[in-house]
Image (cartoon, rainbow, N blue to C red; front, side, top):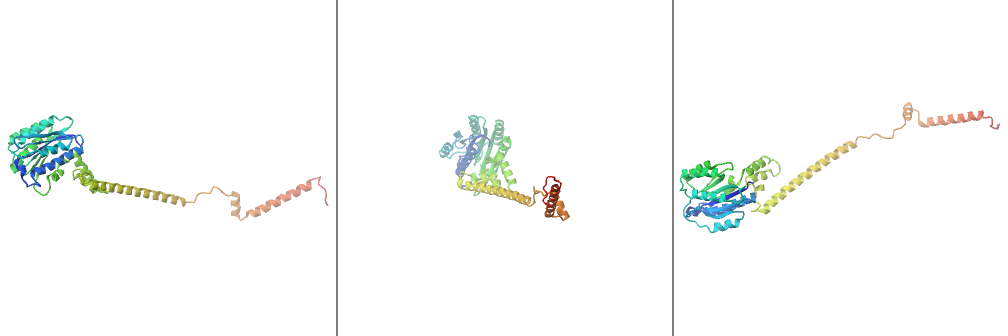
Length: 322
C-alpha cells in the first residue's frame, strides 16, 4: 500500500444538520472519517491522517497528521455545526498542513466532504485545482446532498486536478446505505493494487474458495470480503476452513500418488525373474534325447568296475587264488 499523508476536510455547515442521509449528514461524515482512518493506517502503519473543518467563520485544523485515532475522535466531538462552507480556503489550508508533514516521503492527499452549496466560483476553483496538481496533491471529493450546479463545479475541479496518483469524485445518492459503506465500494478506499488483486482473484476463482477470494477485492480489499477488525471470529473461521481444505487436497494428492506407485510395483512383481541357478547343459540335452540321469550313472559305475578288473589281471604280484 502507498505511504500517504491524508487530510480529511469535513463539512460542518448548517446543511450538515439534515437527516436525509442516515443517520444525519454530520454523523455520516464522522462514521466515514473513522472508516478512512482505519483503512489508511491498516494498509500502511506509517501513513498518517489529519482532520479539519471548512464551515463556520472559516476553516479550522482540528488535528494535525497523526497515526492515532484518539485525537481525531476528540476533534470531531468538539466540532460545532454552524455557518456556511469555505471550500477553496479549506483546500488551501489542507495543502499547507500537508506541506509541513514530518515524513516527506509520504504522498499527499486531501479528502473533502461537501454537503452544502458551494459559494466559490468555477474560475477560482479551476485555478486552485491546477495549483494543487502542480504541488503533487491528490484531491478526492465526496459529494452528497449537492445540487447539479455545484456538481458541475466539482467535475471541472476534478478534471483539472487529476494527476498520476489519481483524484476521484464520488457523488453519493440518497438511500438506505451508510456513507461509509458506500465509500468502501469506491476507488477512494481501494487503490490500484487492491483493484488489480481483486481482478486476479476473480480470474483465478475457478478453484476452491475462488469466489471468496475474488469477492475480497470488491469488499474493500479484505480477505474473503470480511473485515477482521469488525468480525474477527468469522474471518478466522473462513481462514481455517480454507487451510483445512488445502490440507485435504494435499493428502488426497499424496494418497493418489502412493497408490499409483504401488500399482506400478505390483505390475512389476508379476513378471517372473530369471533364476540364478541353471541346470547343466548336459542334463538338458540328455533329457531332450530321452536319457535319464540314473541310466548315465549306472553306465559310469560299470565302466569303472571293468577298468579295475583289467588292472588286476595285468598285475604280476597278484596271488593266484585259483
